[in-house]
Image (tube, rainbow, N blue to C red):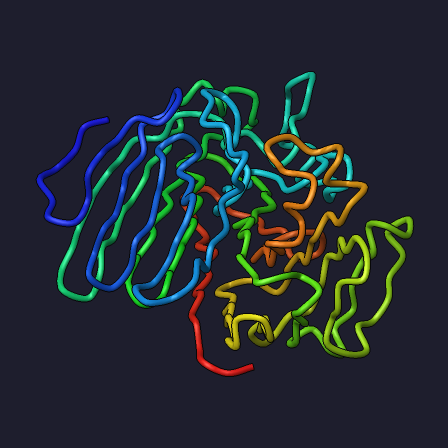
Length: 301
């Protein structure tokens, strides 16, 4: 990994991967150019905000469990995506969550000042990872790391039209998932992946008594994690996104997941800022689209 001179960022190898370690007066974070993935984020003086599994495996070609995996040019199971997205893939086997999570990106830029550090990754249209997508794509991910976390995924279609679904699959750290609820989805329709994708409407803040896997459509306000155990709120603001995913695997699903302790589900939940289902984005030739999220910590529940 080619590194510019930096006061607040250094590179360290862990397993197969080189990690960018951000150590700034306002926050600490881990990132890797594999998948352009932020792995962990902790503002100074706070408990962790972005969760990284204790069993995380830093393996080449495999997304690390936790952080903010980047999902593109589709989210989840390709077969569950709109026809316009499915038509973009010409390969024979479609990996979950797209083509870019376990592949090398370039570290394009590092900028820093007294407020934080900005790290930008680039995936060119010539990447072998994108060879089975019918239209050339250029992807950039930028993280701004300070008292708050800002993440932005920009997808460009330089030559031909295409339709994509996207997500920033953010794992959030919590004191205990049984001690939290999530507000901001009240009155919003969602597809319940655990009930044959039936459409429902959220009636109240979400509690986690079992596995939760919901795709919300028509999101118009921030999602807020109210964490009684840590006496804080984590505010997740969605940029250029009308859809979002809420997920916690609970006991049974965790047993089938890699890179997780049996009780790892207690320490995390995912709020995924997304352009999925009816919010998939069509790009004409020469157009780009930027999906973003802001994550901030506030005192009090």
